[in-house]
Image (cartoon, rainbow, N blue to C red; front, side, top):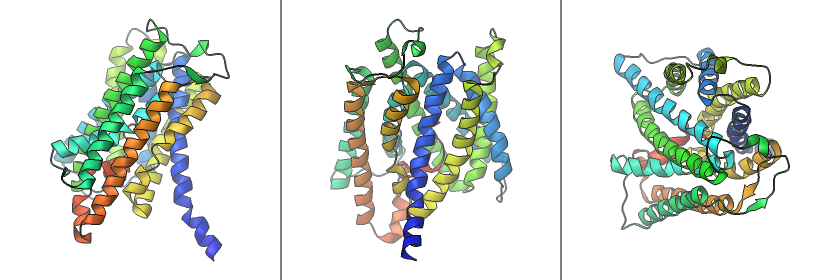
Length: 352
């Protein structure tokens, strides 16, 4: 009986590790597909279209919809489509390792926006408020390091790297910085998405229905953008059996369905802080996947910056836990911050 209880108790841990592996897997396999010529605009349209079909099979709306909610879903899709385009463009020019490191900034930026919109309280007289501020500053410093300082390779590529070089930027370093800036902007966009999502969930607590309509509108909006961008290149829409098809199927299944289901289940089972604590694990997973499957090298700047970001991230999480312990139980839910709500729905994505 004790053994069975211990096994079931480890299920949320194993599930969250699998989710992080799945998220990093999407950026890794999409990087491989884009390196072979696949348009990231077309990739976003195809995998979200398939994801919409899959979500329609499992989502069921119990609460009535109205025009105001539909407009909110449309806004979520608009913000999300911008975030996804920025994310995959950033991965294209840089690396899944950089995207995994900068993804930890999304809860930090969400916290800052929540303070600006008075959804979150920041009392600098309290140790928790000071820790939040310090953690935010540390994380931003780590982001600057990982973006602008590449440094020497500390782990060399196991595969020839030439096939994955991007020729749209004059130098590899400038491509890395450009990709990092796109990913940093994507984190800010995703943070805005979190604020809009939090307000939507408050009025309409049907998570899967929100995800379905969000994905539906995102697909429609990205289709319009992609048709405009790729109108001179109709062959970009042609798919061949291989890494492109695998990337689309993988992203649709593991991002649109698996990740959402596990996040919602773990949120109800363990709480939002537990879910958020696994985010820095994605950096280590990304390093392993990038070196093994893409043949990229690991650079010193990524190592230093990732450690600094993770330290700042956990400082904010620690402050959040400490703050919740300081308030009465009947006020905990009222003071629950948007940083804790961020893992509820897909963002960017790794938050894809």
